[in-house]
Image (cartoon, rainbow, N blue to C red; front, side, top):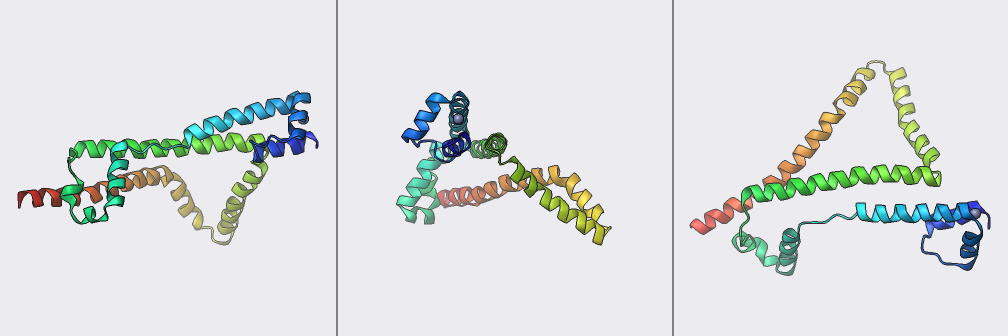
Length: 186
Ligand SMILES: [Zn+2]
């Protein structure tokens, strides 16, 4: 096996301990370096791609899964009932952590792609939509204004999406909380 094949094996099967690979790694310092880099990248990827859900939420969801009847009775489910701002804070932090993890994941994937030579494939994939856009502009020149608008509005659209997600989460919580409260009062 040559260096290229060895590196492909290391990338695709990081835990493969076959003798040919081990022998080559002992003789070839550049492949040994490649394997070390690959391993440290794996460690970072595993740490970054793991999302911790709040223990409180996990316990509550497991409780509901074990006793589906709890869904019909929100007062039982919400004992002890968390404070409103606490729920908002937990979900906001969770969503921010998820978004940050995705951003980090994309960045690390970029690094990984460069290292294993996926970059040219990705470049082609990125070029393909821009070729389609270029053709569209040729056929329909007015579409350029619409595309420009969307490119400029992209950041705002992403923020709106974040706000929409937070609102959807809060909206699901609020009726449960208020129905729980009204049942307690009644
Ligand atoms: Zn080698």
